[in-house]
Image 1 (cartoon, helix red, strand yellow):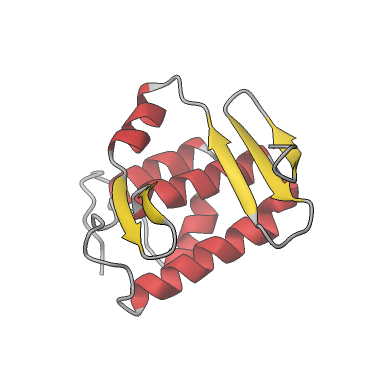
Image 2 (image 1 turned 90 degrees about the vertical axis):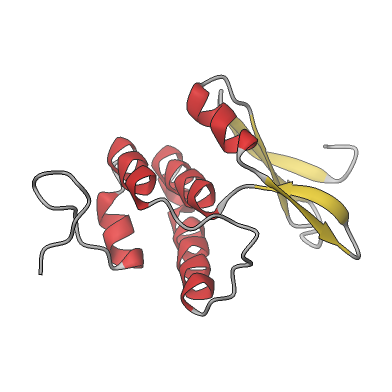
Length: 142
């Protein structure tokens, strides 16, 4: 990545993040998976085709939000950017601008990982979602 003009700005056992030294090439994240949850994220990906970039894999929206929550939990200094990414994605979703090739959000999984990463307040704030009822069956109380 260094030869391609990128600098590593965060490295953990599960991912490495690079930033273009010139800023023009953006960011690249590598995720190393060794858990069933990580492998499942990669298995659920969708292949997208673009005129300029060709075909490339993209994670499902639910998994994108989970990864953003994990990034915030792992590096709170990046939270402003990651929270902005979540807010931008929710805005696209609300406007119906997320292509139908993707699965609908899996709120049960999002809540599970929000709890695991200590991000329940974040999900409630950005998604405006109440907690499931006390029976835990995902129903909302009025």
